[in-house]
Length: 233
Image 1 (cartoon, one colour):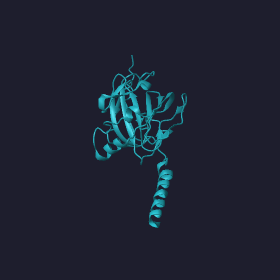
Image 2 (cartoon, helix red, strand yellow; image 1 turned 90 degrees about the horizontal axis):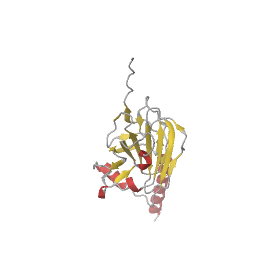
Image 3 (cartoon, one colour; image 1 turned 90 degrees about the vertical axis):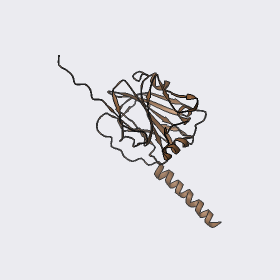
Image 4 (tube, helix red, strand yellow; image 1 turned 60 degrees about the horizontal axis):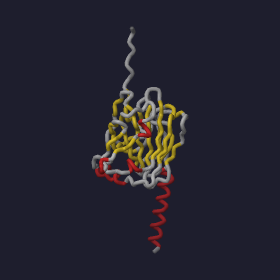
């Protein structure tokens, strides 16, 4: 009996240490120079989809799509672009950072009756089974919070997606606030996901790959094409 009690107490102590000192860690990050689009979250890239007519096709039964009406209807975003999804494992740093600097033009919260588990996408990553987001219903059903950041050259939207075990999404910015590139703006607890929608209004080159591990505020997801040189009349 005593060994069992000791084992349970040890497990509980390790869980508390992990939860308090490891899970909620918040290391400093130094954004690379330039104005390229940075990862908003630590984790693994699970997709980089082209967006057409405001929808993203996903590998879910009944050919469901991810509706992006909370994004693509906003000025400066349009209905086409690229959507990059980053899955945050339980071992990831869960602090979210701004992919570009600029002004928060909109914040949209979408609630859900029930959040579905993200265990399937984690299993697909561990087994190297592609597409990683195949039949992951959380993409269209879970609670999400979206902010739209208007920068000097580009406007992007970042969506925090809650997991089944997430009690709430933390977002510490409001409409009208200004954020710096790579700055902290919120977090999602336990396993979760952050998506970045990059509209096609400005030419970009997506440099991240599916399965790649990225770091919030440091890893570059997409490079903005240089401005064309001015010509003299």
